[in-house]
Length: 394
Image: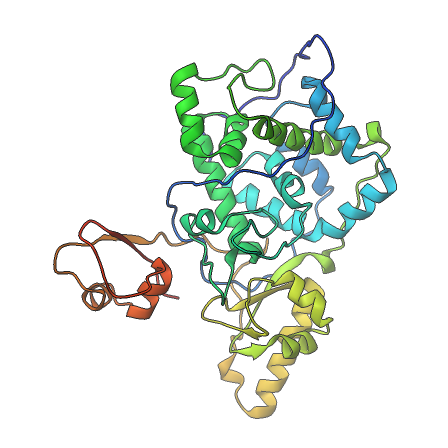
């Protein structure tokens, strides 16, 4: 989808009276976006993308927000991130498979390239596990926020740690914010502070101008810092030599892809079939709440391309030995960039007087237990006017 407007890179350096000191880091506030379509579409088996001339060039070309010299705070954060160049390069190399996967998802939604680096600001791309209703995943989403974005979050499966589902959900949310506000900087504010808060500010203070680089809206310091950090890490990608940084590369065999899991199996078996260490496989697939792969939640595993091929070959060989080759797909769909297909939007059912879960489930050809799980219902009691999410079966 092409947006009607996209913030053009600023051509003028913003003059400030004094350079801001490096801001302190604080906890990102809870975000409560509007209800979005379900973000867990059917899985796809994938192959790594054809090698590009330089994926960093592609990323830079997709940037749409101010550059290094737009604001002193941006340059301060870029220097903070790269204070120890070799350590920075090592950290970036470690998270590069996730970063490159997110880059392809962002391209699909035509989201400004700076947001590919958003997980660096939130978590340094680390798959942070849930703790007592705290933010989780590399996007640091609160449970209620994630559910509103269409992700499944319960003790069996946490979509915030599902790499494809969470990346698609976040990029769709950012696309929505840009459509609403027409400004990628404001979209970042909305991601951090909440859509309704930013909408109220704009209604009161008006749409911010292109200059200065940091929009003149009375946001909290942590929200302003969020944008400064995002532009700061983008600054490093824009001008790595300025910070004595060499950006790493990623061989095609190490690109993350989805490997189809045709039936329930343990993580240990899957790791063995793929020739991977169990801990490494679990780290890439932390959404599963147990050591068993629940194919009703996600019938795929994320793996480096080389291991995904071995996983598929092993399953085919096992099926052949057992005389069940027909149980496995013989061809794979076109997945040149290894992405999830476009999600099917769910339906919203508004409860009427006299409705029951059984009637609603029958009407939509789903199971009562699915309705209860999708909508976090502890019992069968419904109230007129209540809305229920009806996801497409898969």
